[in-house]
Image (tube, rainbow, N blue to C red):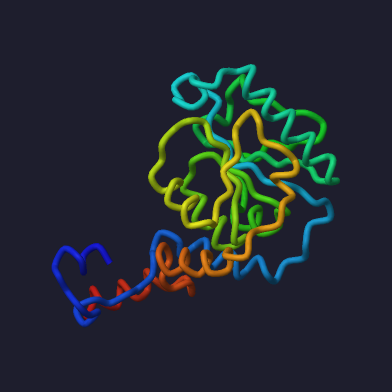
Length: 211
């Protein structure tokens, strides 16, 4: 779309839409996940940022605030008979500031597509995993830590993300049904960020380069 505008093109005649190669593996893995049985224990999934001093969000929020956040989200999950699974960022796998209580599980290396697929609700901070999460779950909660991320802002404005305050989020916000415009917003999301969702974008690109 941007190239069409910059070059003042009125049609798609000079474009070949192939999809997004970066997400091919996720799209294929999601299809494979459909054939697997559901998990025995329901859970919420949080995509975390590293709890290290060189991370701007962690440095800004501090250790105590992050621990209180974990306790609160874990408590809400438990009240809905769900565990809280926290997908740690690779940069913080071994951080001494990682927190875990009896209703939480810290996840390191894993089948991330399967983890997303089986989750009852998905939460995140700023992350590239927002795209596959929204594609599969049609929605994601994102905690606002006061950092301006362009992609995150776009997705909030589109309506496929619900922004929650890092400290003041409530269970009612999490359990609230999605609004009536969500189906339309989701289709716009797919068209804008993925284009084609068969997981064959890389294959199409290869064919173009070889022809």
